[in-house]
Image 1: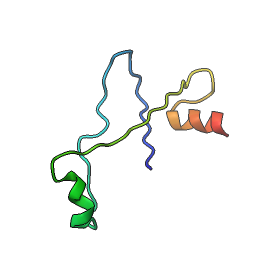
Image 2: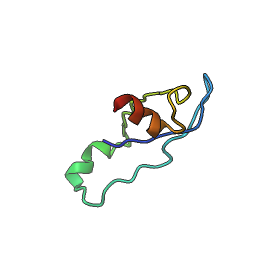
Image 3: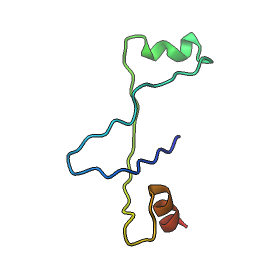
Length: 69
């Protein structure tokens, strides 16, 4: 699990590119890579949003730290 903070504002309907490539570890064996040989690869990304105004925060990291303690 990785956490990625995006600190720019996105307007409704606006797109942002978060991943331009995926680095597969060199330790993967042929067995590990077998599911990807047909070109299929899925990455599941779950997003959370937070407002930084009115909670004394200037970045997403600060805002999440403020509300999560």
